[in-house]
Image (cartoon, rainbow, N blue to C red; front, side):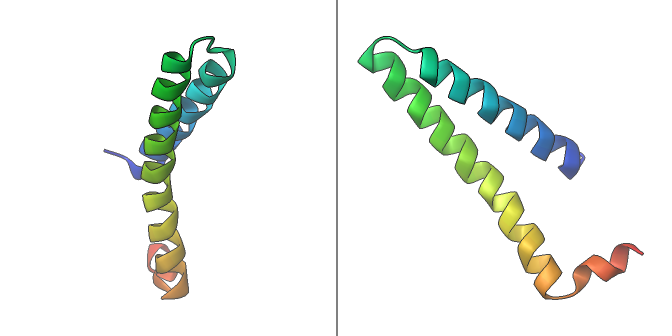
Length: 64
């Protein structure tokens, strides 16, 4: 799978779930969405850390 597409999909899903969390009425719904937001944030963070690590090692020059 294309990493850029995966990051975009994760970002979109994170945004959608943050909106649903804001609209949630019950405590159970809020808990459910907050767990989803946490998991999606951590998943997206893995990709961002990888990109940061690659940039610090100069591996981003390999694409050129």
